[in-house]
Image (cartoon, rainbow, N blue to C red; front, side):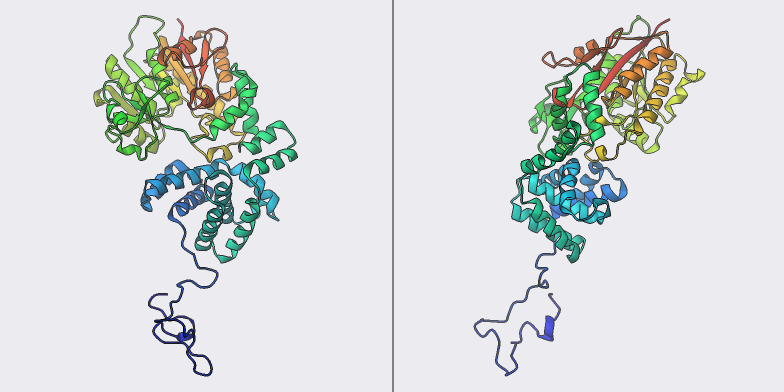
Length: 508
């Protein structure tokens, strides 16, 4: 209350007197010191790192924002140092990943449906629950700081509710809550859904995907656990344009899956040599494998290999890697992205690649199914829009935005794009169909349906193509699918996103 009079009109340098005129607090020396906060509000300022995490959750909840886009901006805006930035990142991402588990707990403690709570209160409760149950934060600090955050951002009234509920959350450890909730689960998939914080339908879809791709369904728990681990930052040096020596000197470690890759976990990746210049890029190792596999597979005939197409290029990671390889092979890459803002990202990604070797188009990919494009390309990448179930660890909020009804529309589009690419590839050329999803409907079934529609299509040995670009100790990624094979990577096996690939060719 600096510059203002305290309650009662007394100034700091005037003694207070009782009704008889006696000076109060006579034992004090000097003027009495007053708190700048009213009683019950001694700490109204939110800790900056927690405030950033709270604001990220509010953006995600209220504006359907993506945490990986909002968080870096917030960290810069609040000028968090490296330690606070790490804390804010773990808190925001952890609360989003664990939302299902925390909501299941809160449902037992709040006397109304969670949907009826003010969304800001619910976000604060999730942040508090994550600190209490999944972070090395002392319980008193988790409670006090979350309540202070609520006072400052929501109000004194709601902070009382948040305080009461979080005290009840803190009465048990995470393992005790899991046991309590598991006892009430009606099925094994519901138990796994609660314990590992995935929607029940995704648990069932991922178990089915494991089986469909030739793995054991019992791996589902390991897969769900891998989804909840913060992924390492993966780097790639564009072939012939960049190198990782500066990154390794800055603390990066050589990648264990594919050549010219590294992992980095030491702070702001923008400071790594080569990243700002675009010759060293952040890219999941699985995406690196898919681009390299398409570029390396031998064409079924010995014809020309100069014209390449990335049909769905945004945001540009695979396009940049393909473009760099194209330079080495004296090929030309067309990167197509129909959405304007994503097309700008593609252009930025390709900027480090000599401009004579690539061009950018902004067409609906299905237009390549027309006569104007028939047989124009030798190699085509179709990194098709998909549910993204293979990248849940990177996009913590996405699992709560997906629904089973999304899948049929996506698979229809995937089939249309694959048909268009098949029109645009020449006889003897190759088409790489890629999704960041292991869902059977978005992977093997799309390919099976495509092969039924095109008698002159053949599936090449994609598993072998992938094996040729990864290190020998890598676990097998392929799975037989009729003639030839497809390839499927997994977070719990390969440490990548769950990327699927099928390489097809056009026969005469």
